[in-house]
Structures are given as structure tokens and as C-alpha cells.
Image (cartoon, rainbow, N blue to C red):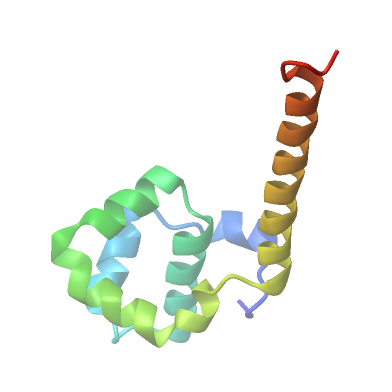
Length: 107
């Protein structure tokens, strides 16, 4: 797998929570492909599974080391940040328009 995985590749190599935990216990003694599988699991896995994995106190040291070593994969990109800002701005504009339509004394 390369750094840019397709959705098909993600589905083919998707880990379960237990498989990801086993790989994290072995970290840093994992291959580059296994490290990429962990990254895909943490970024694209089911939120419940990722949350349960992160909450596991036994994995905390391994997960912290892994996240530190692979921090660049978990940063928010410029496009993602712009999308969030645009959604917040859109929500605020809608709220303002609704307020202007229903505020007392607008009739």
C-alpha cells in the first residue's frame, strides 16, 4: 500500500479493533505496511472501535508513541480546515437570517 490508499484498498485491509491493538502492542516492531494499516484504522475506522482503542489504558504508551512517530498523518489539512470554517460560517449566516425573520419588531 502506498501513502494514498483507495477506498477499495481500505476495505480489503481493514483491521478489527483487536488486530489494531495487537499491532500497537508490537509497535515499533511492525512493518511499514502494518503501520499504514494502523494509520488507516485510526483515521477511517468505526468511531466506536477507534474510541474504545484509544480509551484502553494498557495501550496508552504504545498508542502515544505511535501517534508521535506518525503525527503528520493525523494533522488536519488545509482543505479540511477550510471546509469546517465554511460550515460554521454558513451556519452562522443561517442563524442570522432566521433571527432577522423572526425577531420582535421586524414587522
